Length: 205
Image (cartoon, rainbow, N blue to C red; front, top):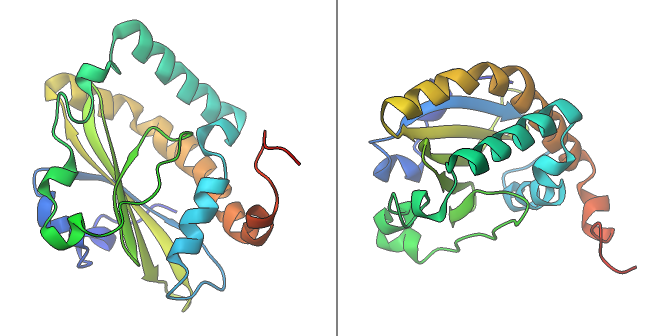
């Protein structure tokens, strides 16, 4: 479910300390019935087990495949345009205590790379020729008393082209990608016990 940007900006997340040059693009919530204050690591594990874009419904998979194809043809995703090349990693900005905190596990199915992971928030980043973007995940007490996952997408467009790109993909994010991701992650939360006991696809049995 889409939320107003204040649902993110009004919360005292640590990430506010070093992302003042990014703008808040989207804020989204994911229902996690029965979740408690200490369940954030369990939710992160569930999202990783969900399989990433390759397991989204067909329309969302098509959009991701189209994006990667265009990126390959037009050179948007070359290593020279990525984190550590075109832009510095957010890790270079971290205060000492966050730099010493666990970074979090990268997921080969997801292009975003871990920046840091705390008890109730985590951040991942991605850069290419269009934008430098950060996905911030936070764990908050929802209106019904259960804790829930909230995602904020922060962006720094790469000039006018990046701004046009973000405007062009906004309808697809809101109408197709985020609703599909919501269903995937909320189902992952419901199925989390099974996900931790069953072998991953492609593993030996």
